[in-house]
Image (cartoon, one colour):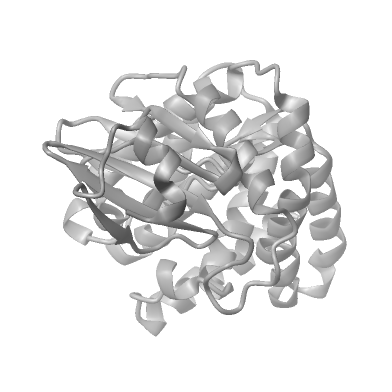
Length: 313
């Protein structure tokens, strides 16, 4: 047992005999998996600094991200669409900036995306998550002002990291429009976003369900950002399987935007998509998202980004 997890162990009726192990991969947190008989739980402690080199100091405290995680996790639990759900938040400990949630037994979706043989299966799973995401974005929340207050600085932090830091790879003619787009992104307050909806935060469970986890990077903005964040990974993978990219983008967007088409929202989506693909190719965590690709594939992705920025900005 981790000493500062005592309160959560008590809430879950765990003892020191129940096996706890470290889960790798948390960037701004520490995660432990605890097994008790046939059950398992995840306990997450929020950190005050990133654990990967190359990330600048975090602008929000562990307590602020804890509050966002709890508020948004409880909010998202209300949405179940088809096989997609959010594991229950079982206990929370503000004193130690830690939460405990129901375990989701399975494999994260990332493993299916980067495997050529399971790429189309991954597309089908993502299509279901996007339908769930659309419902999440349509759900009203009374805590939106509190979440915004605790997440706004982090939203600016990520915009600097994933957008403004990539300006060096853009043509000079695109910089003014790129800057205007990022400023618009920072001011939009339309709905609550997951904020970090990547395939490592989506679990394909043994029972066939799809679990969405990790809400501490939640923010308030335009839903097109969340959709692009997830779809960008499939765009990258599509270069490795020779998939027709525009057909794929249109299909996935239609899974998210199921009602009347908003031209402005779609325009923002395509711009977000350019930036997110480029970030995964050039950013400090590029070894995770594109490190497995050969130089020829990376060059094709970069050329696509150049064309997209010229067309979309």
